[in-house]
Length: 275
Image (spheres, rainbow, N blue to C red):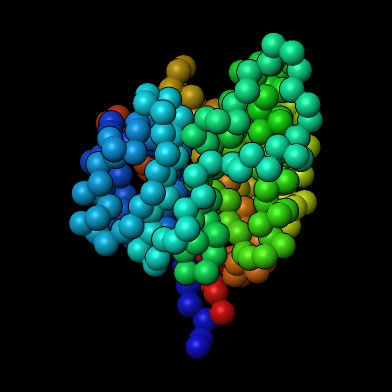
């Protein structure tokens, strides 16, 4: 059997029911083989199922009402869904400090096997403020994700796609000096992101960037005209193991941040060549 190409799109839609028309148009235009959504803000039974099913996608989701929520949809098979980070993943995380929130049960990861690749939709906690309990909980969640990724990669290919709420490098924010000391860019968060890569994954946006090119931003605040001023960050990522395939294309659909009722995130798409 020869090589084939698989496209995987990821998008923090900031409320799937509020973005049905935009999401429908994006799917019709882009036709990704696998679609990963974050911040769906609904329970599974509230997902507009016809949006996927009429287009030949199977899907699975987890959610908790109006907060968080992740979904995976696939037109190339969707088997053995993993609903949330397994409890065993916490073995890779630091101990919980007294008074810190426990985010382990929040609906922030769903994965499924799509044409032989385990593909996960990931929504990393925000962290709120450096040094806070929520920030420490974010680091623990990322440590658990790194541990889980290492365990998965012992047995099969893996792609993680989603909103990681981390800009890995200074080039990934509009003004590193202005944001120094803030969440998303702290050394600890960047180290936690690097640990996920060190599990055996590649930042495909960086890998596919031309020499001297900085990958595009994926998020812009709604406030202060941030999008039009270019004040963005690259916090949405598609991380892939070499065993998943060879990355041949990566794109950010910046136009989805424009127009009526946009999400504050743009969708990103990775195409890999699988042999």
